[in-house]
Each structure stands twice: as C-alpha cells, then as structure tokens.
Amino acid sequence: MNPPVAVPTRAFVGNKLLYTQLLTQLGIPASTTQAIFSTHMSAGRLAIARNAADLADFLLKDARYPIFGKPHFGSLSTGAVRIEARNDDMLRLFDGTTHNVDTFAEHVAAQYPGGFMLQSALSPHSAMAHIAGPAIGCVRVVTANDGSGPKPAYAVWKMPAAGAISDNTWQDGILLSHIDLGTGTLLSLVRGAGLEAETLSDHPVSGAPVVGQTLPFWEETLRLATDAHAVFPEFGICGFDIAVTDEGPKILECNDNPSHMMYQRATQRGIQNPDLAPTWQAVADRQTKQVAKIQCALKAKK
Image (cartoon, rainbow, N blue to C red):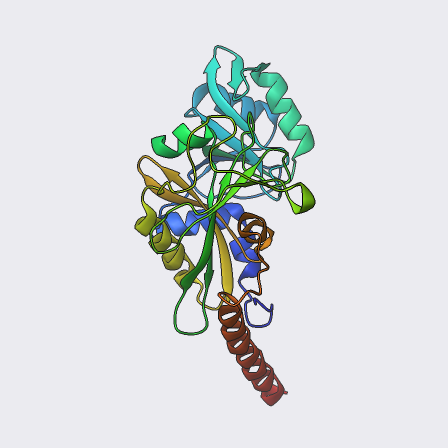
C-alpha cells in the first residue's frame, strides 16, 4: 500500500522526533518533546544531552514532569518509561518505584546512545481513564487514500494491561475494542487472541461497561487523522496512534506499515472482509498506477 518508489517519505514519517516536530509546526496537535539524549544527533532548538551528566542536569533543572521517555529508534514500547515526579535527586516512576537521577541517566546513556526521547507525558481523558486506568491507551485510526483524499478505514481502542505504561499489543492482558467510525461507539471488547480470545462487555479490572460507550472528541480524532495523512497524501494507508486527553486528541506517531492484527482481533474478522476489501483494492490500484508512472518517467530520463 506504500511502495517505496511511490512513497519516498516513509523514513521521515517513521522518525518519531522529526515527524511530531513537523506536525507541531503545522499546528496539528502532537506529542511534545522536551529534550533528547543522543551522542551524535542534532535537535535544533530542542534541549539535547550528549552524556549522562547532561541528561542528569536536564532532569534536575529543566524537566517538566511527568515525562514519558522512549528510545528514538525503538518499537513495541521496549525501553519506555514514565517518570511521574522528581523529589530531590530521586525520580518516581509510574509503578511507584524510585531511582536516583544519576543512576537513571547513566543507564539511558549506556543503553541508548543512538537517541532517547523525553516527552511531556499525557494522561487519558477522564472518561477513558475511568474505564481503562491512568495509562494512555491510544486510539489506532487507519486512514486510506485512493487518490480522492484520506478517509478513515477503521479504528480500534487499545487499552493497556493492568499496571502497564503503554498499550502495546504484545503485553498480556491488553484489551482491544472496535470503534464505530460514524459515532465513536465501542462495538466490542476482546482480550487475547486466537483460540484463547475472550469476548467481554465490561472492563475486567475496573468493572466499567465498555461495549456501547462512546469515546470523547470522536469527530476531532478522525479529523486529526485525516488532516495528518493529507500532509503526506502519497501514502496509501497510515496507522495513527492518537492519545485522547481532556484537552483533545494528539498524535503520538504514524505507522507507515500498520499491522491489521489489532483490527482482526478486535472484530474477529479478517482484514479482507466485504466491508474493507474495496477500500484496499482502490488504494492498491492507485498505487500501482503511481509506480508505473514513476517508472516510466525514470526510463525516459535514461
């Protein structure tokens, strides 16, 4: 859906720092990066720590807590940490544990010399926190562009497992809910996958009802996804992870090759079902034409 020859911007969109900085510059709500640790990267006007001492200095003097930290080039939430507050030279994490600032900085410097982002941590909308707890559970909105402009294809709410700081689907206990695009109503609640999948109605930890509830800022969330996709209209599909807060939705990142497994687990249907197959075919047809046009132009230059 996003062939490299037709979508040369994939690497840029996959760069977590550059992509969110661009969206912010364009006035599209996105996560805010306060600083970055890297031994070699340049970050323009952003605060940058080159070594453990620089990072510790930032955490002691300039950081605005809470902070969400994650590797710049990581995936699957590996290495992610949420720092709730600092008391003197001790950092208090999401799970209640405390760590010395210098020790934490030395760990980051040793493990992530290629880059570690320190972002302003977001909290979920109060209605969503009531259901799924205090950690951000993103809404994954997948948009498709067949040449007529980006449109939402489907959306799934990812609810973090109990005690987790992120919503990654590899974690045991994560819950997925398919969302009605027209209304923002939650249509399902599924825990697990395959033969072990469980269909529920209420959240198993909070006891709050899920199926039938409507997510806040729904129209704004869909508009945010389509507006962001329209910045790079050459993409056939995009998978946006959007945090819905009390202040509104914000984009955390864009997946240029979104896994459809979340949709399939949440709906217990294949992705090539009668509702979605025409969308994928229309996108594929457009991209096939784009690739042929580009290849023809390249041959003409020889």
